[in-house]
Image (cartoon, rainbow, N blue to C red; front, side):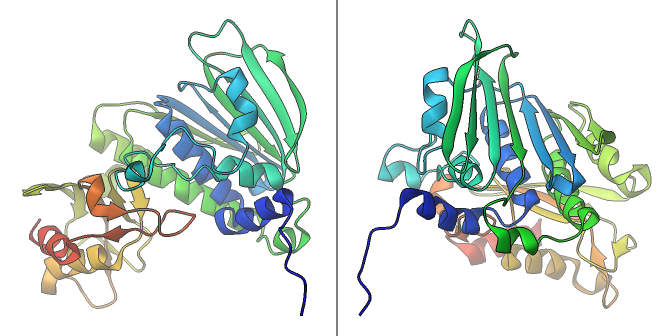
Length: 321
């Protein structure tokens, strides 16, 4: 029988990376969520060759202290939770403390950050989980994370990356999802040095949606604002005559977290009842606010699936809304 051994920490990080980071879009998602948790009002996503060559996320958030940068790339290092009780009352998008460690183990990564009260910024360079340099540098308040050569030491994962256009399409999709739900954040998406999306900060939610979907679609959206005890549902749905052949234009958020949930999706379709033609799909953007204690986001490392207490009650609320 093979001898049981304790795995090397670097190997543990690579195993974890396989769960958290599937493709360049996974990196973009995790880093955008970190920027949002830092209360950033400006987030720029700069990618080259669909993220295969470079992913750079720059924000003007609260930043990371110099002495905490080396800790930030260790597994299960997070500022979001401290106790078991916190795990069941999560109000932030990130909390597991695995993203930076996972990315650091499968790429060359540079993190530059400055907090508001720091005299100077600090920068660390990491490759294969090893810190190559740790030094002061010049930078504005906020954080910039550069990822080069993703999956360079995980050849099987690197080999199975899709085409540049396909990988960028996935990045575009996740950036779009977060633009739709965050009108007060100025998002920029740059691909191969070309500006693809420039979505300025606005207090007008419809103007924000229009910057993504265009005016013709926005004109056919109906606002939703519905409350049922401690469930609040706000957002927009399309008129029955505005449908698509697929579900691409459907976004569900719970407490600002983009998720996929069959129960909520079914409730929307049941709400339309027989107003939809067979094989046609409505457009909708729904932000559902729930007590964090009623949801479990610690289901999967990618956090796209959550468990919801009183799911049938939520189904009824969404259908009625």
